Length: 322
Image (cartoon, rainbow, N blue to C red; front, top):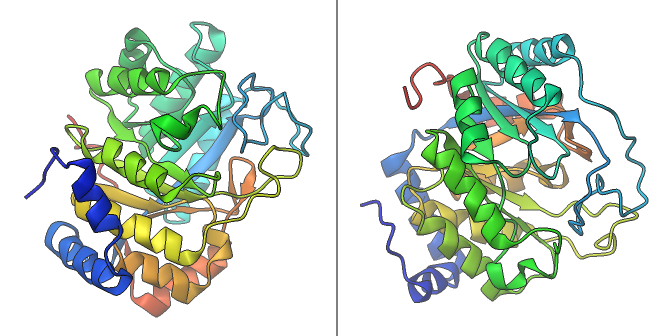
């Protein structure tokens, strides 16, 4: 049964289960609600990099920190569409576009993004975007252009959020997710492990996600990638056991959602990634970069898929929310 009424105590009990028992329960739920051996392959492209006024403590694209990221304006439509074609040929079925904006503005750049969405969708790909905060009207425009999903991560618990970001509130994030949902877009929202948060913060984040009705269709579980020049440059990265525990708990709480093993995957060995898949992860990013952070090389992923007898999930853009 898919539930949306999880109590915080129930989430805490699941999260703190003995790890092997937790993995086995999550694997059973995964077999019941998902197709074992299928992985959704996504590709993420930064269509506008750097120069963001936000102060997210983990992000290389903030103007407040000195990092190696070079600012570039919004890419040309043709460049983005060609990148989508290449992603499709590599096996990706979802193409995600990220712009380092605090919020969407109703200007020529937004019109260009809408045209990018139209043309990428015409390739038969699912199309996801992460553009910052949205109004309901902007969300509707994105949906009308052919966007299938909107990414807007909650990052951490509401109580810890202010320690990581001060330039917007947790409620701002929830409002954007509500606007996307109201427009008929599927939601892609999750968190980052390794921000200095407590175990209780991780539990609270999973509780917030799992009590949304409906659940987010995609839940990225990210591991912090420390970036020189940001406040979290010296932070301790989460272990594979932290990742597996969060993934398994998310799978049990949100059995129909895609659980995405996202940032930080390049640090995991093939066997560690396989354990994440056993625990319920069934979506990854292909390509050597996630916006500005490194990702596992395609050749390694192809070898991993072959070793695990994994098949890539077909695109479902043409039927999603139609």
